[in-house]
Image (cartoon, rainbow, N blue to C red; front, side, top):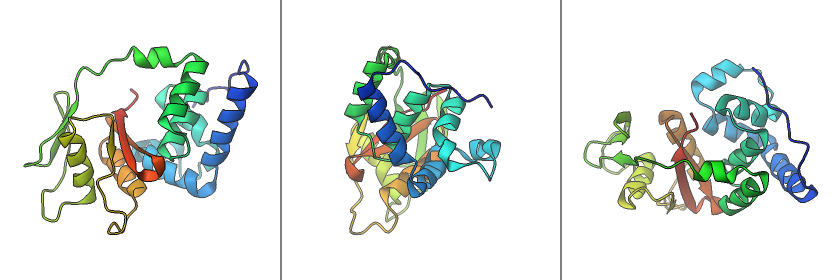
Length: 198
Protein backbone atom coordinates (compact mmCIF):
# COMPACT_ATOMS: atom_id res chain seq x y z
CA UNK A 1 0.00 0.00 0.00
CA UNK A 2 1.30 3.43 -0.96
CA UNK A 3 1.11 5.92 1.91
CA UNK A 4 0.78 9.61 1.01
CA UNK A 5 3.50 11.96 2.21
CA UNK A 6 2.94 14.98 4.42
CA UNK A 7 2.94 18.36 2.72
CA UNK A 8 5.99 20.54 3.26
CA UNK A 9 4.41 23.86 2.26
CA UNK A 10 2.25 24.37 5.35
CA UNK A 11 2.26 27.60 7.31
CA UNK A 12 3.61 27.23 10.86
CA UNK A 13 0.11 27.83 12.29
CA UNK A 14 -1.55 25.13 10.15
CA UNK A 15 1.35 22.73 10.80
CA UNK A 16 1.01 23.28 14.57
CA UNK A 17 -2.77 22.70 14.53
CA UNK A 18 -2.35 19.52 12.48
CA UNK A 19 0.42 18.32 14.80
CA UNK A 20 -1.86 18.89 17.80
CA UNK A 21 -4.67 16.88 16.17
CA UNK A 22 -2.21 14.13 15.21
CA UNK A 23 -0.92 13.90 18.78
CA UNK A 24 -4.45 13.63 20.17
CA UNK A 25 -5.53 10.87 17.78
CA UNK A 26 -2.23 9.11 18.43
CA UNK A 27 -3.18 8.39 22.04
CA UNK A 28 -3.46 4.61 22.17
CA UNK A 29 -7.05 4.48 23.46
CA UNK A 30 -8.20 7.03 20.86
CA UNK A 31 -6.32 5.24 18.07
CA UNK A 32 -7.93 1.94 19.04
CA UNK A 33 -11.37 3.58 19.05
CA UNK A 34 -10.67 4.94 15.54
CA UNK A 35 -9.45 1.52 14.37
CA UNK A 36 -12.77 0.04 15.48
CA UNK A 37 -15.06 2.81 14.24
CA UNK A 38 -13.45 4.18 11.07
CA UNK A 39 -11.99 1.08 9.42
CA UNK A 40 -14.31 -1.56 7.99
CA UNK A 41 -13.61 -5.23 8.74
CA UNK A 42 -12.30 -5.62 5.18
CA UNK A 43 -9.93 -2.67 5.65
CA UNK A 44 -8.76 -4.04 9.00
CA UNK A 45 -8.08 -7.39 7.37
CA UNK A 46 -6.20 -5.72 4.52
CA UNK A 47 -3.99 -3.85 6.99
CA UNK A 48 -3.49 -6.90 9.21
CA UNK A 49 -3.79 -7.66 12.92
CA UNK A 50 -0.34 -6.30 13.73
CA UNK A 51 -0.87 -2.95 12.02
CA UNK A 52 0.79 -0.21 14.12
CA UNK A 53 -1.96 2.09 15.40
CA UNK A 54 0.42 5.04 15.15
CA UNK A 55 0.14 4.84 11.36
CA UNK A 56 -3.67 5.08 11.21
CA UNK A 57 -3.70 8.49 9.45
CA UNK A 58 -1.43 7.25 6.65
CA UNK A 59 -3.49 4.09 6.20
CA UNK A 60 -6.76 6.03 6.29
CA UNK A 61 -5.45 8.48 3.68
CA UNK A 62 -4.30 5.65 1.42
CA UNK A 63 -7.53 3.66 1.75
CA UNK A 64 -9.79 6.70 1.21
CA UNK A 65 -7.50 8.26 -1.42
CA UNK A 66 -7.28 11.59 0.37
CA UNK A 67 -4.39 13.73 1.56
CA UNK A 68 -2.64 12.89 4.81
CA UNK A 69 -3.66 16.25 6.24
CA UNK A 70 -7.33 15.65 5.41
CA UNK A 71 -7.08 12.17 6.97
CA UNK A 72 -5.76 13.67 10.22
CA UNK A 73 -8.67 16.14 10.28
CA UNK A 74 -11.31 13.53 9.42
CA UNK A 75 -10.02 11.13 12.07
CA UNK A 76 -9.83 14.03 14.51
CA UNK A 77 -13.52 14.80 13.93
CA UNK A 78 -14.39 11.10 14.31
CA UNK A 79 -12.49 11.00 17.63
CA UNK A 80 -14.12 14.25 18.75
CA UNK A 81 -10.78 16.03 19.12
CA UNK A 82 -11.28 18.34 16.11
CA UNK A 83 -14.46 20.38 15.67
CA UNK A 84 -16.21 20.59 12.31
CA UNK A 85 -15.57 24.34 12.20
CA UNK A 86 -11.83 23.83 12.78
CA UNK A 87 -11.80 21.08 10.14
CA UNK A 88 -13.45 23.48 7.66
CA UNK A 89 -11.04 26.27 8.52
CA UNK A 90 -7.98 24.06 8.08
CA UNK A 91 -9.28 22.45 4.88
CA UNK A 92 -9.81 25.96 3.53
CA UNK A 93 -6.24 26.93 4.45
CA UNK A 94 -5.00 23.71 2.83
CA UNK A 95 -6.89 24.56 -0.36
CA UNK A 96 -9.06 21.44 -0.07
CA UNK A 97 -12.37 22.98 1.01
CA UNK A 98 -13.42 24.15 -2.47
CA UNK A 99 -13.13 20.61 -3.82
CA UNK A 100 -15.25 19.30 -0.95
CA UNK A 101 -17.90 21.99 -1.42
CA UNK A 102 -18.16 21.23 -5.14
CA UNK A 103 -19.40 17.74 -4.30
CA UNK A 104 -23.16 17.93 -4.03
CA UNK A 105 -25.27 15.29 -2.43
CA UNK A 106 -27.80 14.32 -5.06
CA UNK A 107 -29.65 12.03 -2.69
CA UNK A 108 -30.09 11.73 1.04
CA UNK A 109 -30.33 8.54 3.06
CA UNK A 110 -33.76 7.29 4.04
CA UNK A 111 -34.48 5.26 7.16
CA UNK A 112 -37.87 3.53 7.08
CA UNK A 113 -39.01 3.70 10.69
CA UNK A 114 -41.54 0.88 10.17
CA UNK A 115 -39.26 -1.68 8.50
CA UNK A 116 -35.84 -0.60 9.82
CA UNK A 117 -34.40 -0.51 6.28
CA UNK A 118 -31.78 2.16 5.55
CA UNK A 119 -31.31 3.15 1.91
CA UNK A 120 -28.93 5.59 0.27
CA UNK A 121 -29.87 6.51 -3.25
CA UNK A 122 -31.44 3.43 -4.77
CA UNK A 123 -29.29 1.03 -2.77
CA UNK A 124 -30.33 -0.70 0.43
CA UNK A 125 -27.50 -0.19 2.92
CA UNK A 126 -28.62 -2.13 5.97
CA UNK A 127 -31.58 -3.44 7.90
CA UNK A 128 -32.08 -2.82 11.60
CA UNK A 129 -34.44 -4.68 13.90
CA UNK A 130 -37.58 -2.78 14.81
CA UNK A 131 -38.46 -3.59 18.40
CA UNK A 132 -39.43 -1.92 21.63
CA UNK A 133 -37.51 -0.46 23.25
CA UNK A 134 -35.59 0.78 20.20
CA UNK A 135 -31.88 0.01 20.00
CA UNK A 136 -29.42 2.87 20.25
CA UNK A 137 -28.51 2.49 16.57
CA UNK A 138 -32.20 2.72 15.63
CA UNK A 139 -32.63 5.85 17.78
CA UNK A 140 -29.68 7.58 16.10
CA UNK A 141 -30.99 6.78 12.61
CA UNK A 142 -34.49 7.84 13.68
CA UNK A 143 -33.10 11.21 14.83
CA UNK A 144 -31.55 11.80 11.40
CA UNK A 145 -34.73 10.71 9.60
CA UNK A 146 -36.93 12.99 11.70
CA UNK A 147 -34.58 15.91 10.91
CA UNK A 148 -34.66 15.14 7.14
CA UNK A 149 -31.04 14.00 7.30
CA UNK A 150 -29.56 17.28 8.46
CA UNK A 151 -25.76 16.95 8.54
CA UNK A 152 -25.70 17.37 12.35
CA UNK A 153 -28.32 16.30 14.91
CA UNK A 154 -28.42 16.35 18.68
CA UNK A 155 -27.44 13.08 20.33
CA UNK A 156 -30.81 11.38 21.02
CA UNK A 157 -29.39 9.02 23.64
CA UNK A 158 -29.72 9.77 27.35
CA UNK A 159 -26.13 9.63 28.66
CA UNK A 160 -27.36 8.49 32.09
CA UNK A 161 -29.20 5.50 30.65
CA UNK A 162 -26.85 4.45 27.85
CA UNK A 163 -24.53 1.65 28.88
CA UNK A 164 -22.57 1.88 25.63
CA UNK A 165 -21.15 5.27 24.77
CA UNK A 166 -22.20 7.19 21.69
CA UNK A 167 -18.75 6.56 20.22
CA UNK A 168 -19.41 2.82 20.34
CA UNK A 169 -22.81 3.29 18.68
CA UNK A 170 -21.21 5.42 15.95
CA UNK A 171 -18.55 2.73 15.43
CA UNK A 172 -21.23 0.06 15.10
CA UNK A 173 -23.10 2.16 12.52
CA UNK A 174 -19.90 2.79 10.54
CA UNK A 175 -19.17 -0.94 10.41
CA UNK A 176 -22.72 -1.85 9.40
CA UNK A 177 -23.25 0.99 6.90
CA UNK A 178 -20.03 1.50 4.89
CA UNK A 179 -21.68 3.96 2.46
CA UNK A 180 -22.23 6.54 5.21
CA UNK A 181 -19.69 7.84 7.75
CA UNK A 182 -21.04 8.85 11.14
CA UNK A 183 -19.05 10.87 13.67
CA UNK A 184 -19.58 12.89 16.85
CA UNK A 185 -18.74 16.41 17.88
CA UNK A 186 -19.07 18.62 20.95
CA UNK A 187 -18.08 15.82 23.31
CA UNK A 188 -20.68 13.46 21.87
CA UNK A 189 -23.54 15.96 22.24
CA UNK A 190 -24.02 15.98 18.47
CA UNK A 191 -23.83 13.33 15.74
CA UNK A 192 -22.83 14.04 12.14
CA UNK A 193 -23.09 12.09 8.89
CA UNK A 194 -21.49 12.36 5.46
CA UNK A 195 -21.25 10.09 2.42
CA UNK A 196 -18.27 7.77 2.78
CA UNK A 197 -15.35 8.67 0.50
CA UNK A 198 -15.34 6.46 -2.56
